[in-house]
Length: 603
Picture 1 (spheres, rainbow, N blue to C red):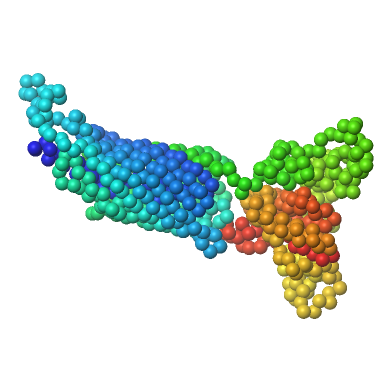
Picture 2: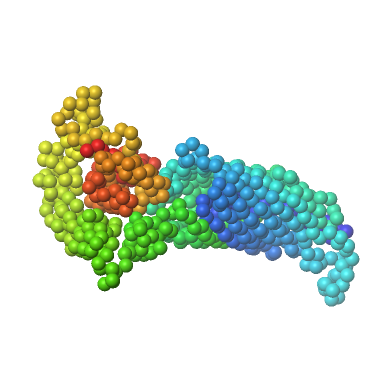
């Protein structure tokens, strides 16, 4: 009986050690373990993960934990499954769990806020293996321990199982478009049914409710460096655990990130962690430096934890990719790597055979590129549909038909030729005195353009496409007698804003829907023309940003042309970083500045 009591004491101690459940050092990367509300938190992704942890390896039969988990996002619903096994002690005391999680994610307000509610249910099992124990009756003073002999004990119940339930709530506020800046807070309650276990037919032991509170904030310190301070608190029965730390994430490139962190689990361990993320794969390792009173018994050994996750991107038409840049998304393009025409579902016009030459002549297509001469800006040279029948051999965004240097990469302001003077935009104002170095303007306005001819340069004009008064910052006043009034906006249609990701010129799906609506309006009103202006934030050099704003303008222009708007109805201008819409001091402001603006004009 004495040995049974000893065994039960070991079991009870293990429960105390496990009283805070498994306190993982990389809980932030195993969100299912942290809070069921974080299940399926990544939109349009399926996540798989595995982990291993060993603690206090200096003690015989130390604590070890194995686990696998998976979750997925289905629109606003997250579903997940987690399985784990942990064990410690000479009797191989084992705990096994299988838990199913579900969460509902709801965007709030303008969509920057997200509130998530999660539930979790499953089974927990505790068990021991008495064959790993030795008892008084198996000990012989002459021969030592004889494990084959009867131990004299009666084990009626070596395994116990119980249902387990948990709930959670998580709130996230995104402070930037690319999620580099955010605030997050969460509350989870585990074991709300206080599961009970009984081994060896003795009195049942209860696992108290586990309260978890956590929060973190991410913000960039530099272009490639993000810092994330964080805290975590567990409270379970008489036990309490508080963790404070910080993590730094450095981006080597768009697909590779290095993470380094340090956390202090108060009065227990100092946690050092590192991780590497390459595309959808993350591998992390952490080590607990034991600073508790148990450090002598553990011989200075702490806890080693390994974790790996992989995310599958679910196919979605929301991700718009146009590999051949022919204005037809890859998911809709039957020839996604070869520029083609909409009429042939993205495939190029086949070469005409002698039998069809006569038909081509009837259709008035001299260069046989599939574009009728009346729509072909280069009717004598086979070209591409997205360039109105022309080509762009030097790939500078200026079609050969209007490129003064078609074989040399150049700039639009210099007719497609490279700039070789100290007057980059060729407006007669040297760069030292030019307030708009990369935009062709007038001498009277210090080298800046005045699109609406109202005497107010565009960079100061609050209405740069509508002639107005200087007293009204370039906007029309009640007295609209300005003789320079060149055009007025179509007041029935709002300004269309197309925002871009950092250093990108790809038009995203939500903006394609906006453009389609504007195109439909223009096709109904033949007298309207559209002014497209390209803009950037202030990251990078001014010359690079000007070229980037040109590419953004061209991307929008190409989409309009591919969908029926002729070049004669399109006006373009590129401003680079010179006309910000918002402050460049925040990620939110820079996101608003990465844009193209489209305004409809009556001409």
